[in-house]
Amino acid sequence: MILLYHKIARLQNDYNSLGVIPDNFRYQMEYLKKRYEMVSLEHAREDTIAVTFDDGFRDFYTEAYPYLSENNIPAAIFITTGRIGSKEELWTSELLRTIFTGNDHNAYFHLTMPLFSYDFPAQSLDDKIIMYRAIRRLCMKSEEGVLQSILLQLREWAKMESAGREEYSFLSEQEIRILAKDPLMTIGAHTCSHISLGAFTEEYQEKEIIQSKAELERITGRELRYFSYPFGRQYDYGKETIDILKRSGFDKAYTTLTYEGREPMYEIPRVTVPNLGQGEFESWFEQLVQGEREACGPRQKQSELVEYIGMLKDDKILLRESGKIVIFGAGVRGKKLYRELTAYGKEKEVVCFVDNDITKQGGCIEEKPIISVEHIQEINPKMVVVNSIWEKEAIEQLIRCGGRGIHWLIN
Image (tube, rainbow, N blue to C red):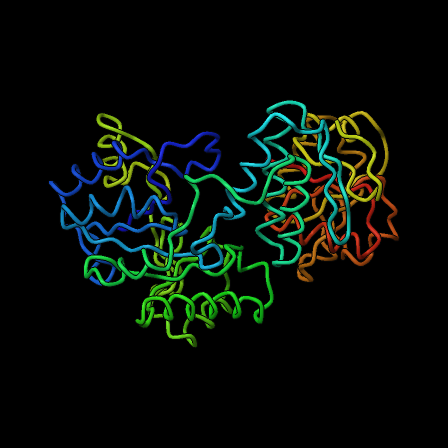
């Protein structure tokens, strides 16, 4: 079994559940070492435990590494190279810093994207959670220039400097060299920018993968063989990603899924470890081993394109106003959304579904036709509702095809 950690630290506003406090981490290692063989990735088997860390935060060096070294426990760390030695935070934690810390926020945050803009309410914690979840999804699927523009806009809104918090600092080159010389430690690549690779062209993916590998090989003086996918879910990479890894000389790649993919050497599962201490961790872990755990109202926008981002229950425009509704997607999510709208008495206003899958086009769901996105202007709907794993791509495609009144529902 391969375990996944990110940060060994006590964190505030840890909405992604990345942190495990040092005392809990040491207890977890002590518990596992007494009961299982702790091995490197190279020797990992089903009946052993291998420990991995993603991202490359400096607290690995200050909190985890001393304990692992003292107790002769191997570990692998997959490093995002774009922030090595930097005082700026990785964008994933920079969002948390700008949105949830400080007391100088304006009541609304105006976000400008290449194809649309949106005013996010930011007056309550619930507002900020919705805002964070939406912007996080946009960032993970945005190229570096757009990503940095979003961060700049957030810092200006929050009246913050680019230098971030010490607890989110990254490993330095010297610290990486020290780790690389330790036979207990394995260094792996994790892209340059920590993006969802599956949302990008093959060329852009190749740049992110090859540059991160080259940078770490320059620092360590050693060939890298292992890679982990940022976010690591099934839609965060694709066949072309795996082909790039093979061409680039990677032997293995690791996901955050709990099951093995179709390419066993390049879709190796890992289990994310929660922040649990004595009494809780052993119960959680033994259930995992036994297989009892699963898987082993906004203002008017300037553009008037994206009309709402938030929860369905809070979408007053969609629920109170009448007019033609189109649902983006004719798969499981689209059907679920139709049932939810039916519960609110809106099923008669749903005129059709739009989908990019040509095998679905021409069919029907609940007697509602499925059409191509390119034909959406012919329907002239008042609202287009999106609840998809490809939200950013869906919104941009709808805008290009003339879609208006887009409602992005966040689960």
